[in-house]
Image (cartoon, rainbow, N blue to C red; front, side, top):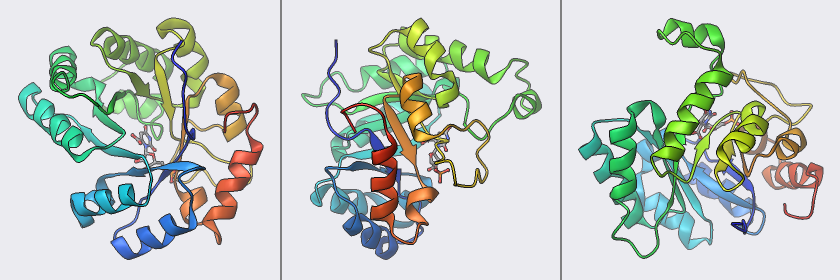
Amino acid sequence: MRQLEGPRLIVAMDFNNAEDCLKTAHQLSPQDCRLKVGKELFTACGPQLVEQLMTLGFDIFLDLKFHDIPNTTAKAVAAAANLGVWMVNVHAAGGRRMLEAARESLSGYAETPLLIAVTVLTSMTESDLADTGVVASPENQVLHLANLARDSGLDGVVCSAREAQQLKQTCGKEFLLVTPGIRPVSAQADDQRRIMTPSEAVAAGSDYLVVGRPVTQAPDPSVACRDILASLPGARR
Ligand SMILES: O=C(O)c1cc(=O)[nH]c(=O)n1[C@@H]1O[C@H](COP(=O)(O)O)[C@@H](O)[C@H]1O
């Protein structure tokens, strides 16, 4: 069985400038967490900031949720591999040919990032899905897209921790589950809808917890980070 190493907490660095991002990064430790660079930060600061964060010793999840024609997606994933990131994601809804092209684009690399597919965003409810023409519960749609991602050779999916138990049973223990929508008991849900606490998420089978605002907007991000780690069951934090 694949042995997961390193921290399971991924802090979403959703900032609009390098200064605030680096200030928070210096308050956190690569021993405690990995960092996620998403659309806001990458659009504002580009690959140079990703490199700076890696120089500080952090593993980087590049969360740009690529969703495009197979050729464009494959080349974007290869560009992420060239940057040396630890994890990169695409949208499962891009379909089988796009997912397989993304997987194939990593075949020439000695060290490849983990390739993960976004299923149904954790901000979405059944009625949000219906607005897009998808007539399914989030649970069923996540399961459907997770099976597609696994069959296309991806390493795992982004989903809500609420779906984790079912996905571990269906897709297997090795298939990685990366779960945003994590909220400590006292935190606000914000725009998230399918949420769980950190300890519930780990108990449900989540491999990696993505937490943004509850850490980055806390008076002391390092304390918020350590509080989350202390709340987790089991030895591996
Ligand atoms: O792919 C993601 O990381 C992602 C997928 C998803 O379904 N839901 C989701 O919230 N995210 C990201 O996870 C982070 C969650 O941030 P907070 O809601 O502040 O904890 C944000 O950076 C989102 O872009």
